[in-house]
Amino acid sequence: MALKSMVMEFGTGTDIRGGDHTKAAVRALENALRHNSITFAQAFDVPLDKMQVKIAIGVAKPDQVDRTAVASVLPYGQAEVTVDQGGMDVPNEAGTDVTALANAVVTVYLDVPEDRTQGAA
Image 1 (cartoon, helix red, strand yellow):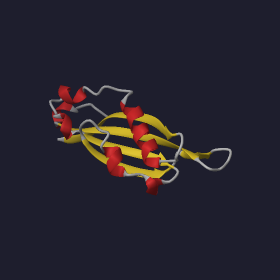
Image 2 (cartoon, rainbow, N blue to C red):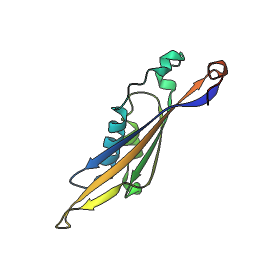
Image 3 (spheres, rainbow, N blue to C red):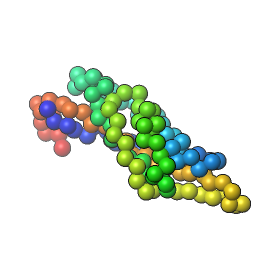
């Protein structure tokens, strides 16, 4: 078997009021997921719960992201969530509130038989 990257998708999310970095990260992941309909697992006869999904989140305050809450958004697959410095915090004019922006990169991997990957890069 060979672990192969099958799809990569990108998303952006915000928490307009409150600066909740987890909420922004969850919305970024949801945005990425809404851009696709993954059907290739069935083509390789791989159960959906065997997909390995790497989720990379970028936010201004990585330590404020609940990785478990982000992973729970996935409808199936095994999640691995990393959170790094990125995104952006935008304070309001009064300086009393923050809009948190997050970016997500979702990469889906399948462990597929070698004979199904011949010639694949």
